Length: 396
Image (cartoon, rainbow, N blue to C red; front, side, top):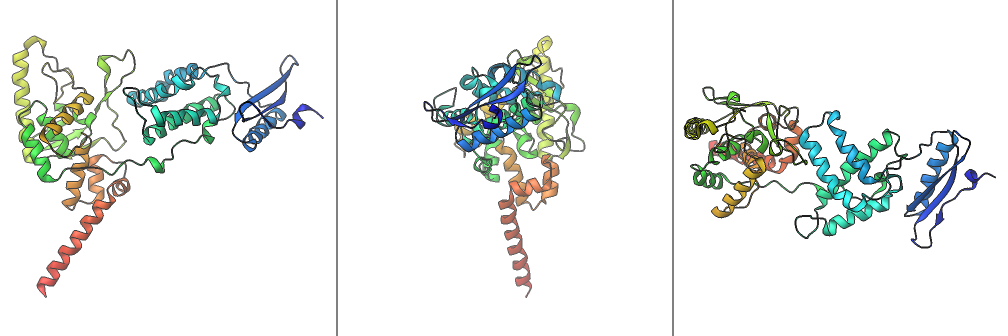
């Protein structure tokens, strides 16, 4: 019998894992080709892979892996992502996720990486994965890392670099276990306290617009005067300012994008009279600042909110200022993004319907809004039912 028909998984006495060696036919020069696969946790998994490789050998479809390391492949993969049409911020997020993978697995040959190697990576990140200070990464972050790595390896399979995606069988945190925490928000009284305390500060108008429109951080930092109509009290959300921390990124890593987070992100948002007044004052202050700075003023992007010299604001820096201000006021701790959740909570309390809220927020669908804030809608329904009952009972 040939080696191909008799090959079977064997256990490595040193590591306790399973491996196999199998013939996959001859190369173009007539030389015998063999495939060695190591590191399987069980005999069953080794047998499944053996069956795949054996079948590829019979149909002459076996792809010899390139001699790439994980580092080399991932760096090439990230470098090639711009041609796929992904947003620069998305690509930067993929790069940041892979920065957790490369220090651990970067030196391994790509074709020799196993599911056990990925399990080891994820376990290590869950214990001591943080880079800025000691501590574990969250399950949610590790799930994202796994998702990006899975995509990268899938692309390697599509391109014929790998014969299979070992991430399919890796034990990463599940999507269910990494659902985002319940949204946090301020009551109207808490929001009033914050907006009153920050009204005369440089970022006070920005905080007001974010809180009263539910605009995302990048959307409000990228807001242009040409997209604001104060006479009709309406904002057109048409672009956002993204943070891209890739090495060598121009303009300090700030990138304007006409693409919003979702296809529904381009939208019209009506604003209240008090916010209109705040924006009128902001425009006046900005004109005064331009005269004060003189030739050094440079608001080339026609932005509503800028630094003192007219330059774009870094959205991450804005969030840090927000965090410090909240802490000093002694209010319930929220992230900047929770201003968006606060706006939704207030809209629901005002009996706005999911479809209208979804359009205002730029959600992909009303179903997403209903799922994300379902418990709030249930509370509003209960209050509405009680109010109706009270009116009926009073009339009896």
